[in-house]
Image (cartoon, rainbow, N blue to C red; front, side):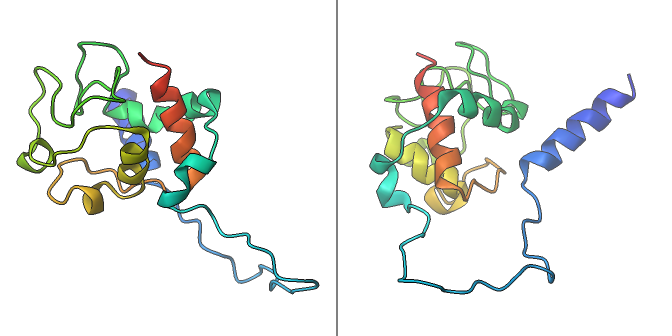
Length: 150
């Protein structure tokens, strides 16, 4: 059973994200034609994304360290069952931070999209320690998975 705490620790570290920096061996970008808009969608572009619930379920594994989608079951974080449309800080039996209870947020898909990018930036003082997901498509996929949990 000594491996269980190690496995949980490794999962928690994996949820924090990884290096992702560019290697010194990476080739330089060379423009060979007209400039194209290849920028990642921003928070304002959520409506232009289509979430993939199956990929969102896979990505949710990092969320499942603290959350569940089962109704009435809280972990380190509140249950995310039927989260879309629910007021922030409203899950019965979960002890929320003052910041979350007082945020006034209603969990629309757009609000979740912004929150998952930068939880502490969206709700300063939240006790959620997750750093956030930079990739808009990953956030849209997780939200599609959560939307299916009604």
